[in-house]
Length: 140
Image (cartoon, rainbow, N blue to C red):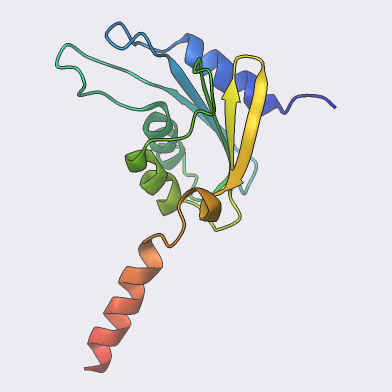
């Protein structure tokens, strides 16, 4: 079975990471429902740990590029175990996903695990909750 091209994009993004403080490079690649791809890497700065996660960078590139819904997202790092997005990035991913969006957690050798957004962030809060709130407020 051949590797998904998004794995190679995520790995190339990881290699561009600017992580002199944590020494923990992370890359991310997104495929939207329309088939467009976007990438990001973590970028740190001297006021560490204030920086930008790879997922946040890829999502920002997606929004700037006109994308709106993530179909697949690959996250890669050099951790020994399963590398999952941090809590903040789980919420960012959720904002632009469906319950069926697939999150691929990768190491340098390939995909180590796959979860849907619903599995990664169960009982999550998303944009539809605000829409429900607005509808309820209009009825009162």
